Length: 189
Image (cartoon, rainbow, N blue to C red):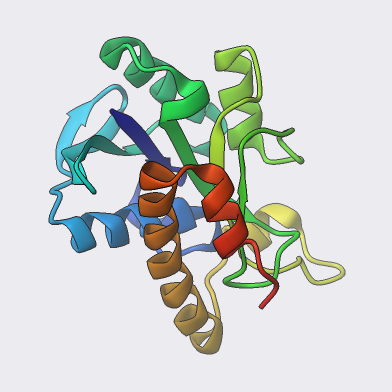
């Protein structure tokens, strides 16, 4: 069983913002595989389904970004899942251009508070992740204002394509492993 967690902030005001690309990607995955993400459990909204013959839990933590680890830890404990090879976390990355994916098997939080909290709750940084580029913060912008802002119309189209690519990457991570997905998707756009 795989737990696939997309990070974001609950409530309407955060919908479609840069910080919520994890939620948007989960919605794309849910649509592609016909999984209803509607059940409230583990401080998240989850959906149970199958991708490429493997059982999956899609989850959107409802703890707000900076406490994402609480929700993910609860789900891992409940399903008795090993995060080192069965957890995939999807989140925004300001160091990548809009729509660029970067898949990793481990690593630091890189300043991302949601990932920082997950690492704190797991006690280590070895879990698969898909970083979805949202573009660098313009000079003089407040970081929080930037990540909680919306994409331009042009960038939104690029992001929709990135969500579909991330859904494909998830399937490859499940079927062929993270190394194959890194080789296929970690290419510069």
